[in-house]
Length: 136
Ligand SMILES: [Zn+2]
Ligand SMILES: [Zn+2]
Image (cartoon, rainbow, N blue to C red):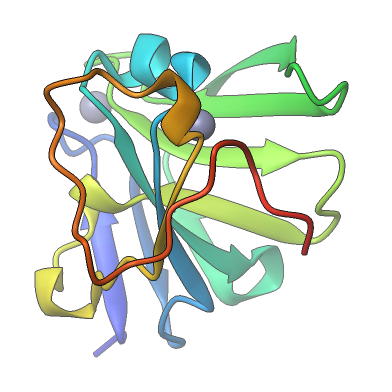
């Protein structure tokens, strides 16, 4: 059994990994809010080589305010956002943590882009919070 598994809403796209997330963060940036339609996005990061993806995804590429090239991968059938790649993080993939089956392994370590959060969104006071993305 894989350590991590998940799928989109319709099940056309699924993934597995034998490693736990390297890092998980809640992102309140306007791009994540627009892409997911949610108040914020929880992202779990893995080495791309550690994640096995099954099924066809569609992708959308855009440039973030950081100037980095972002690719968002989603199910072309149901529209679920699943994965993200960032030109600044070669070899890494983020997974939209809401799609992960093992909910107990989704442990955000910090909140980022709090400068653009929806004011009513509560923040865990025990976690560090940054205005933008902290440098490494
Ligand atoms: Zn789907
Ligand atoms: Zn974001």
